[in-house]
Figure (cartoon, helix red, strand yellow):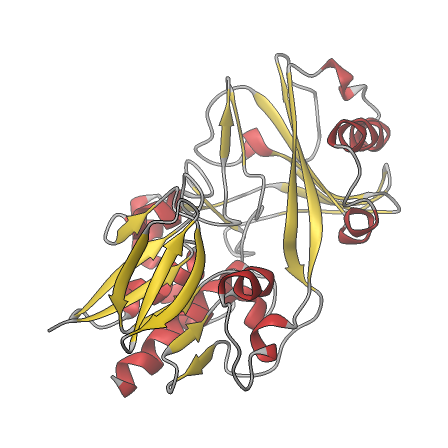
Length: 329
């Protein structure tokens, strides 16, 4: 009989685990969202689209480069050849052109396209929020937010943030704090769509001396369709201090900040929306294997936060955990 593994979360770490686990294992992925990708997310609204999570990714390891090769050949991953600047609020202090050699990539036509392509090969249950896991007859039983239960799983893989692990894992064991004590900081993303494009001499900006830390012309990314769109993200420090601020006030403040940075009144927008990422970035690089495994309990935890807040780290965490599982099963 095939072993069954439940993976909670369909971001890149959970999908990478499912992709590289041996083929004689039955894997089911569960995700509370309506789409794949976790923070490699894309929102489509009216005539606009926004990558409101991860903005791009780079490649540092041979393993990730090899993994991406077939998706690059299909055009599902493409280089983003942006004009990049560093801003001291609204003053350019450095600029350069991203090239193919500099290696800044995005999913195409959406940031979520890479995860969607991987998910096509997997059994994924979307709109299914797992709220509890518990042992029943030496196997794992999962309960969702509608109190539906599925059981018979030999292993459970948590591909979610430490805070979500804490909420779902309602049992104690030695070493649990290893999974639940890490703190991820918050971030606000503001999405703006315009009927008329601005004349800009850059497409991506790292910002200092502002409550915004990043601004991009989202519609400049390869394969994007629809109208002129801007995606800006707050600093983690400002988001943490204002995590309970009313969303209308968050939107107003960040729009004011963006207007000053761009020296353009962006209140002329056609569409505006704020997204709060309550758990966005790990505060410091982590040491260790890049994943957690407990063979006695038969639980695994994967995610970029086991390494650092990078897309490549999410892939490496899931990949390494799957390879370890292949050895011990």
